[in-house]
Image (tube, rainbow, N blue to C red; front, side):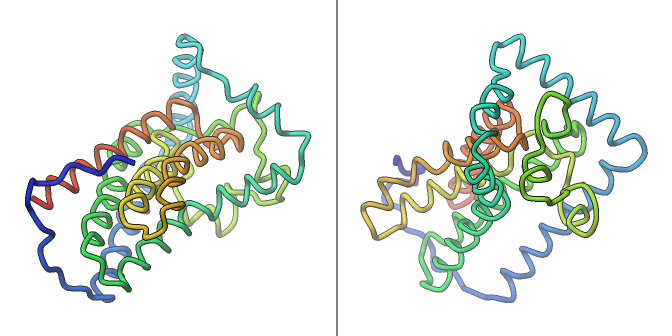
Length: 240
C-alpha cells in the first residue's frame, strides 16, 4: 500500500498521550454526529431522505451501476453467509478501527495522532452531506431486502438501537470511508508483512458488505472511498 505523502525529511513531532483527551474527542464527535442526526430527522426529514434515495437510484441507473439488487440476489439463499455479512456490518468496521487506534495509542506509536486525526476528518467531513442531503439506505426500497431485519431479527429503525445512529446517512458511506483510512494506517504501521499485504483488501471487503446487506448504494461506496482519501490527505497537511 502506498504511504500517505509526508514532508521530505520531516519527522513526526513528539505528542502527548492522554486517555482523558482521547475519550473527550470521541464523545465530542459522537455528540456532533447525533446533533446532525436530530436536525436531519426533524420535520419532513424522512420524506426528504426517501426522495433523495430515489434520485441516487435514478443516477445509478443512468450510469448503469445500479447493481445492488443483482448482488443481493446472489447471496440471499445462503442464510449463514448473510448472517455473517450482517455481523460484519454491525461490528467489524468500528471494532477494527477502534481496536487498531487503541493498539497504536498503547504503543505510543508516533503515527497515532495523524491517523486518529484522519478518522475524525473523515467522520466530520461527512456531516454537512448528512445534514443537507440526507439519503435513506437502500434497505428501505421495495426492490431490496433489509437483511439485518429479515435474517438477524434486528430492526435498526426502532427501539434503543435507532437512537444510537443516523438512519438517513447513506451518502457517503462512512463504513467505506473509515475502512479506507484504517487500511492505509494498518498498511503503514503493522509489523507483520502479511497484514500489510492484506490491508488494501479491507475497503473492497467493507464495500461488498454494505452493498450485499443493502445498507449503502454503489455511489455511497465510491464517495466514501473519495472522502477517506481526502481525510488522509488532510491529516497529512495538518501534520505539516
